[in-house]
Image (cartoon, rainbow, N blue to C red):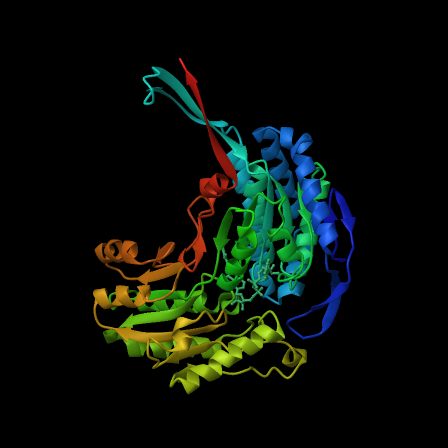
Length: 478
Ligand SMILES: NC(=O)C1=CN([C@@H]2O[C@H](COP(=O)(O)OP(=O)(O)OC[C@H]3O[C@@H](n4cnc5c(N)ncnc54)[C@H](O)[C@@H]3O)[C@@H](O)[C@H]2O)C=CC1
Ligand SMILES: O=C(O)/C=C/C=C(\O)C(=O)O
């Protein structure tokens, strides 16, 4: 399929083409157009115009119905979406078909449900006046859309993370200009087609393709016509976007990187903990911000845990590649650094040999490391690959301290059969999300996001609707 922009209700190919590469084989598989600044300007203008037209006048029920048509449209073209997701990212087909594409439709349905019949007035109170003895007043609060929202999404879960922001932004009545990652633009183009077919008014959703720094991403996030920015990606990129947005004091919602810990207590179901850590460290070859890169295991079960995790990592097959040659090189540089820093490589540590086309692609081996001090860069920096470092601990206090000794705080996992311990430990972990005896079990209504360098704000359910709208209090003297 042809990767195209979608601006003001029309498909466009403005700008110089750049190459798209299949991460499985390293071969060039197509091109995408690099949006010039003028097209980004036009997209922002179209979004603004939509707010004062049919889209701006749509009721919550009409917006809910539109979101449901988009979800149905994704379902109707399910196989096309799966093909495009696999082609763009190289991830296993099963992952795309069971997680990414169903969740994309689910994101729209979740907000269609949340919106239907939702009162536009959040609450109404009758209170005594506190200033100047003005008597009684009736207060009520309405929520207004923010206006034109810029959405910048990454390459790891391209459609899932794009729709995770587009759905609530539209639900709240905003107009959107989205820029997906330059590495993975295809599913976003399909989404624009579905939105077009669903009959959303022109300008309510706009899509521009291109790179980030000094290109479409920066043009959009620094644009004076943008009222809010929602971004998922690297923490350093979040900082750059914030600097760019500062001139216009544009509000931001950020979901950033992580260096996520797992705590395995000696009383845990060890088989479940090993199984869960295989999932949490190696799903999508570790290219999910929620993946575990630091595992702390209580000393009595440390050796057995490491042996079992190493064996499972060595036997993994059918895993996908890193997204690009540059990212593969970054992950491999950490594999080398780990050895220089004194790590024991329990499993992996290199590049697999397949004897076919995949040898020109960007695969790295699932890797388990031990023996590094806590200050090692490998233990502190986000690698974003299929790798974890396993270290022992002796007390609950020490486990909590180790988990919290990070600049990040996105997602943690606790493995224990002791319910009291789970309740004691979970709230002490400096993290936006703590899973107990599971990983990445998602309810789309719950708050999702990170603390410290892992983000600003929360997404999910009402939390996203709060970010994408502004409360306006109306006070009437009575
Ligand atoms: N959720 C997460 O934690 C994610 C983390 N990463 C990390 O980021 C590293 C690099 O991956 P990238 O895709 O390059 O992530 P990135 O954070 O650089 O890019 C994400 C999105 O931001 C855009 N972008 C980049 N610079 C920008 C700027 N100055 N202004 C506006 N938009 C900008 C990109 O075009 C892309 O759409 C990975 O190696 C990984 O460590 C990547 C994806 C997701
Ligand atoms: O919303 C989810 O279920 C998953 C989110 C994952 C990320 O935000 C990420 O990997 O960047």
